[in-house]
Amino acid sequence: MNVGGIDSSRIQSMLTQLKAITAENADASSKIGSNESSIGIKKGKPSGGVDFASALRSSLDQVNESQSTAKSLGEKFSLGDASVNLSDVMIAGQKASIAFQGTVQVRNKLVSAYQTIMNMQV
Image (cartoon, rainbow, N blue to C red):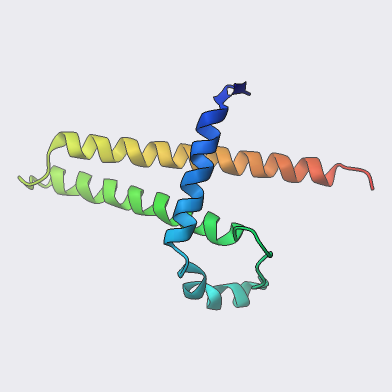
C-alpha cells in the first residue's frame, strides 16, 4: 500500500529499525540525565511504550556520527592517505546525506503534527 508516496512496508521497516536502535541504546538515557534536568525535561517514561526522547536522541547521534565519519574520511583522502579509497569517501558522504535528509523529513512531520494539534479547537 502506498501512503503519501511512501510504501507502508518501508514505514514498518523504519519503525522496526527505530525500536532496534532504542533497544541497543538503552543506557543513553542515563548518559543524558544531567542535561535533561538542566533544561527542564521530566524524566518519567510512559508505561508500556518506547521513550521518544531517547529514540530521537539516539537517531540524531547516529546521524551526527555518520557525518563525522564522512568528514574524517574526506579529510584523510584529501591529505593523501593511501588506506582511504575514493569509493569509501563517496559512500560515507552519501550515507550521511541520506541520514540528514531523513532527519529533516522527520522534523518537518513533527512540526506539521505540532501545528495541527495547536490549531485544534478544544
